[in-house]
Image (cartoon, rainbow, N blue to C red; front, side, top):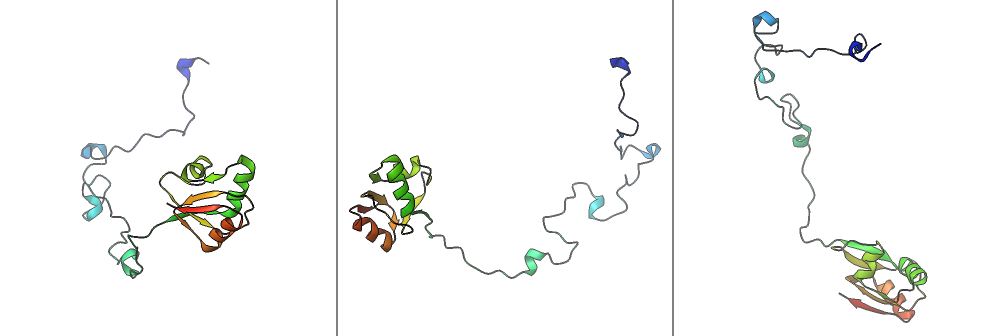
Length: 148
């Protein structure tokens, strides 16, 4: 066996169908597209969700709901997470820099501190929003809360 004698296995490759090359090719005329209709025309592409003229699903189903353009999304951070970080990394002040550095939020997120878990460390917390129970627990532990 030599490199110049190598060939693909029998039946593993096919020649592609060359259409629209005149009557002598056997695929001239309508070029395997059949007669008339949208699919026979050049430039045909069916629109997304087209169901052959039947009213498409996205138009049969009624519209409902409302998207509030003024909604403010907060990323929740719980007290147990703050307590864990305070113990492990010995952090006394929690602001946006600390939350970002520890991978809790991204730089454009707004943070809301929630009251799950308990906190024993005396920490300063700077946040965009805070729940009443979280604020109470932080102040009970000797910490302080600042709203950004």
